[in-house]
Length: 256
Image (cartoon, rainbow, N blue to C red; front, top):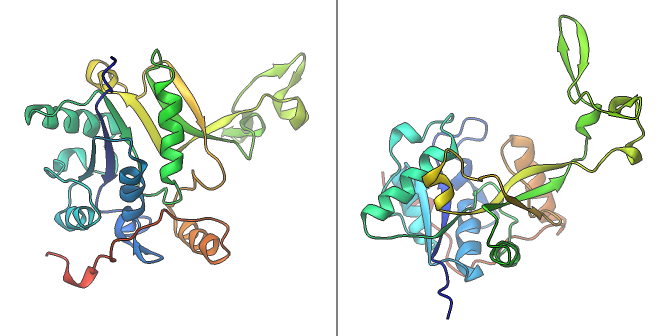
């Protein structure tokens, strides 16, 4: 009988957001935004542990309220706005290993994608585990603006970002229908074998499964306009949040 690999979901919630202050714990509908990723991870039934990776005691208290573990706080040096994912992912896995907790697979579920549902995670998990030769899986969505039509400016001259052609016709002068489909990664979901970051300087590896987000699963909140749009989507019932049966966290009683 094959043993099911042990898996952990990381909910990264660094404090000190500049574009939308405290966005990870800012109330969206009835709960702090981080709550939706925590409950989606738990209610998916996929993970052996759901752990919030944060540098803040306040964020940690909120995360625990919604059922996540916070066994330790992230070190300050890997919690800046320029800290790459590889640093804190490796640090978290090594800290857990030092406590006797080994995980074969990890997932990153960012709080800024609140419309990712438990069913989204289940679908991604099934896709990832069906292809054990892959290093990782990453959520993507079709580009609305094709990069073949994008430019950079150098010394007051335009240069194509992607200098490719179809025959003798450059991409920037081709019809959209003639261009290959291009996808952009979104921030909603990543799954990978733990060996990948622990043995290389990458959280994704080289063999990456595409997971195409549906609807607003990959909607990412990072700017004030994104927040306005998220509230609009909820008001018009164009998007839904994961169901949460826990009483809302009382921000007035949070620890100092």
